[in-house]
Image 1 (cartoon, rainbow, N blue to C red):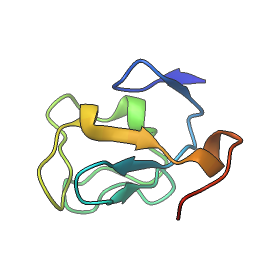
Image 2 (cartoon, helix red, strand yellow; image 1 turned 180 degrees about the vertical axis):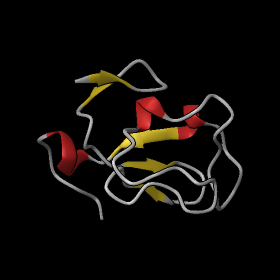
Image 3 (cartoon, rainbow, N blue to C red; image 1 turned 180 degrees about the horizontal axis):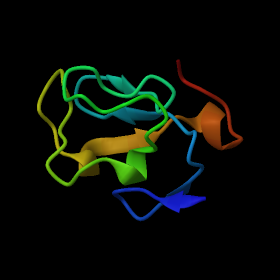
Amino acid sequence: MMPSAGGTRVRADSRLECRICWYVYDPAEGDAVEQVPPGTPFAALPDWWRCPQCDAGKDMFLPLDADNGGGSHE
């Protein structure tokens, strides 16, 4: 488990969702816009990384419940 921006512990393969625009960061896909390679966990994203859809900071992302053992709202 790795700490996320909000201090919540999430698995390295957990997807996180932007609270502003609902963009989902999936570590398996990375972020082609910012040239983040596939396999990059959210916690390993550079400090300057922002949501590619709405420009929100990493602190605006929450883990998707399904990735942390709960139900999903997808």
